[in-house]
Image (tube, rainbow, N blue to C red; front, top):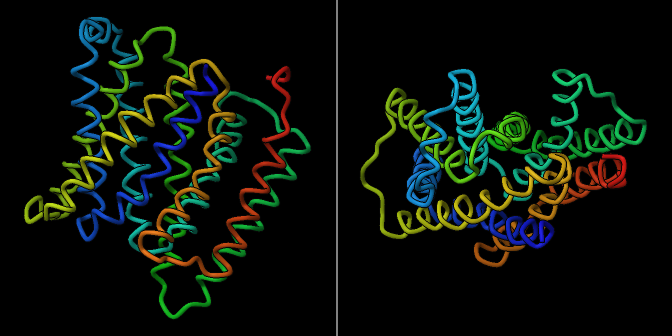
Length: 288
């Protein structure tokens, strides 16, 4: 059953770039805030009596929940911003490097070592990143390269969010936890948006509906299922499963917006995904 939930969750989150494109030119900060606030409100309604357990948590664990919310806000703000500057293929391929950063954080925080094949995979993925970024570097605008950097920043935030969720899995009801984390993320994004002068008005009907779909399909359905899976299977395996997201996302924007990936983006993206598969995809379940 976790495999089925993982497949549905991956399919749901893979539609995110499509909805984000449809929501543009709305500010990336506002799109990100709408996504997590919608998710937080809907999940909060389903949490019911689980809120009581949240309120009974010690301050340290509440602080961890808040930290997870900030990591989620950072991820969405950077990644959604990247989609306004670089191609869908480049953005989703780079944000898919999250298993690499999960391994690095595991080494730094949990003192987990790297296996040789993981080092090989990270090196291959790094090469793919250089190929992809090299193609953007040779372009006429620096926007794509900035978008690539933002997507990598979004990838770094994901493992922090997932690791905190895994640490709290025995103490916090899943739905209430996700509601709290999304609400914290949404409030943080609204504060940042207000601070930098983002306008919260003038959103068209199509953009508004796209943001609602983004919150309901990608966050409420997709992220809830992925967070359920991360409580019963290793974090890096959930991240690994998400590697099909670049394929689905690129195909959807190709069909709807005729956004054909550039050769460096397609080649670099393939090398990145192959590298992550080499490094993390061949782990046997018994080794975890």
